Length: 292
Image (cartoon, rainbow, N blue to C red; front, side, top):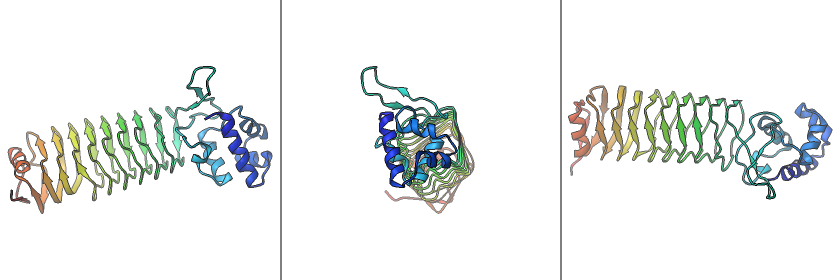
C-alpha cells in the first residue's frame, strides 16, 4: 500500500471526528508538520504512534490497510520499497530488533513478517492471524495471544514466559530450541506441532488438543496432560513431575531409556502405546488397557 493511501485514510478519519491537524498533533505529542507529512504521503507513523493514532481516530489498525502486514520498528523510519523502481511501491516493514511494551496488535490479519531478536512485554495479539510468523531469538513476556491463529509458525531460540495462548491454534507450528515457561495453553490446538530441543515447563494444558504432536529432546516439567493423546511422539525427552490424568493415549510413541518419572492417573491406552510405556519401565498402575 502506498504512503499516500495511508495519508488519505488518516485525513478521512481525522475529518470524520472534526479535528484539525494541529489538534491531532497535540494529542499525539508531535508537531503539526509531522501530521501534514503523513497526510501528504511523505512519511508514515511508527507502530507506537499508529496505535495511539488509531485510538484517537476511533479505528483499528486494519483500517489503514486491508493487507496490513507489519509495523516499523523505529519512529520516523522510512519503509523499504519491495518492488523495483517504476512499479507501485509497497511498504515492507520489519519489526525485528525492537523493544515492544504494552503494544496492542489485536485483530491484525496477515501479519507474516519477522519479530526476530525482539523483546515483547505485555503486548496483545488477541484474535490475530499470525500464521507463518517467525520468532527467532526473542524474549516474550506476559503477552496475550488468545484466540489467535499461529499455524505453521516458527519459534526458534526464544524464551516465552507467562504468556496467554488460550484457544490459540498452533497447528504445525515448530518450537525449536525454545523455552516455554508458565504459559497458559488452555484449549490450544497443537495438532501437528513439533517441540524440539527446548524446555516446556509449568504450562497449563487444560483441554489442549494433542494430535500428531511431537516432543523431541525436550525437557518436560511440572505438566499435566489430559484428554485425548492421539498419534503423538515423545522421543529422548526428560520428564520431571509430569502426569497424564484422565487421558486416553492411542498410537502414541515413547522412546526413552526410562519413563519412571511419568505418573498416570485414570488413563487408558491402546496395546501399542501400552507396550512402549512398558518397555520404558513406566509405572502402569494408573493405565487401563483399551480392548482391541
